[in-house]
Image (cartoon, rainbow, N blue to C red; front, side):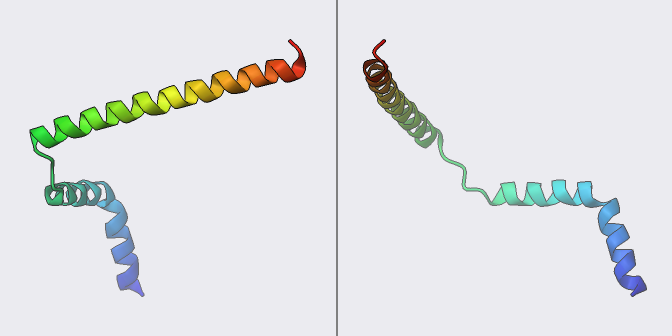
Length: 73
């Protein structure tokens, strides 16, 4: 029982150090994209954002006009 309490105390004392050590270890395992892949994926994200923005703007405009028609404004 005393052993478990010591482990708990030790974990709480070194929690921040352990967090950074584990985070660094996980970041080393990450497969980072190459520069051409990052550039291609960035363009893909920008294109999708523009398409979704245009879609939402269209829905907003249509719903606004529909509400004005319903309310007679």
